[in-house]
Image (tube, rainbow, N blue to C red):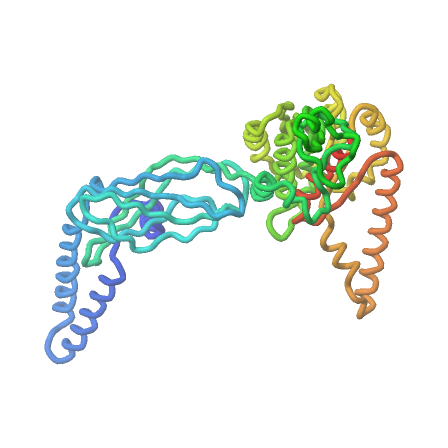
Length: 452
């Protein structure tokens, strides 16, 4: 009995094969039943009513003859290889109707619950034709998701009965971090950094790699005038230099407990991954070597240093499955791992929770050893709630206490950041929407200063 009930329940929930009555048939039977009941008051008995109702239902089964058989309906699904988080993507379903009958179709795809979608309703599938249906999905979580079922219901033009069919179409959806920030930088680096007040400028006094010879303009350094080309072209020409390529940049991604703090959209780790891809794109476009290490209490992912924009694909496929680890992060372990893997001088840019990091006074000795060879910086996301509490108007005693505590915590944090700064370690925080641009500006600033 339980198994029979489950089969019927699956049938009602779009998860089985078979036939089911449509609302049109139910209204038809109910209307006939009410009409016969009224007539039976004067003439017919209840037996005649039951016989007439059963006859109507039996005649309605003829409707199934005017709809395609299950073997005559085929389906195929096309999903993009990579879906960006918090970005709409199209999924295409192609139906092939090998019968001569048109049908009205509705479907439910086995999309994960972390996807937002609205399925198309009552699509007409022409007989002996192929019909393509497209619907939008909005992934909310990263990861690898398996999609292998497509549930379909279709009915004839009379619409009294619906046939159900389940297609087995195995697909894998790879949901990657949102790459909007990375694409914005690649399209126009100077415009991307405009609001940060950082320019990708040339180095001073001809230091760096020679780029080209161009016409002299007001404001250029006279010491960079190319006198030979000026005499040849009868026009003042100057040498242009750019920062040296081939530097090493190591991006450290903290996946520990504090990176699971929820933001408006996603959590801290989501924003860090977006900033990582944008910073990696900036360094690779400049011709530098980029490596990535993801960690919590253990090392979760390592991408060896390489250059060229094609290296972005390797970084992306290594970090897109990362999830928050409920354990605390082991910073000393990752610093030791960096020293083993990165033999050349590198910019170590750590994406982590600043409040947790600055309390690790025991790390100072390890960082001093790292600083002898590498340039170390840490960048995190500002605590929105703490900033909001500090700015609130103290209209009551409780609000005044909350504001005082928030100010005290911020003062302590600033004091610790100043302490770390005196030791030669830069500690920065940025709003969640400015993390990517701030991390790129930090990298560009180090290039402009020649720190690497």
